[in-house]
Image (cartoon, rainbow, N blue to C red; front, side):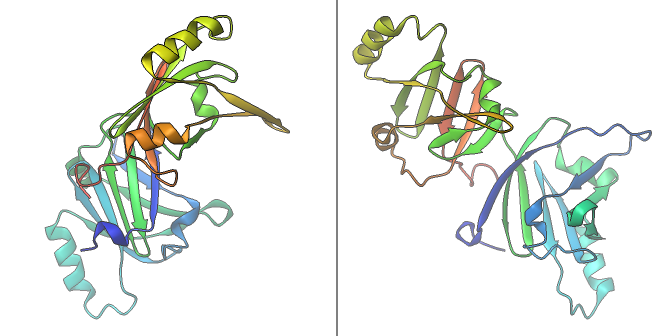
Length: 243
């Protein structure tokens, strides 16, 4: 079993539904880094369903007793499978059947992923509207909770938590919001934007003093949980998530 400190990658994904003629549950997972982690086409992989998630383990190429490995895997409710070469060289892990019922995962669940060479573990996040981010909160997804370019927000910090609150018609209410921010010791910001060939990218830079007040470092990685008008940043609690 690997300790948390050994993991060298973190990612987030969401379980999406693919239209199919069968109701048989299926899980297909493909990302660019799979090959770098050893999950190349044809590699033997152990799939293990676990409460609230799954684990994929790359099997040693020099397996002496395949039947013994298969037996131990089935005892844990898992299965042996092979990774696939998909389109444009993309690697794919695919599993289907009733063994997926043991995970408790359903369509729409957001998953956090921790991985290293030969090992991938996924766990369900408590909220489905979540993104992985740094102190520069960036991406088109900001528009989903209403944080469009040039919109105005306040940033509040408390130990272990940073809260970004959107203020409607903020540009027109600048004087009012400046007084409000000063009174409540908040940071007043605007969503930044930059145009490029394919459109506009927007971002929020969390001020250093807000990070410091929350007990965070500029290099930290955060889970951003959002709903309309609010984004909350916290460091992942990997132990609570089952890692």
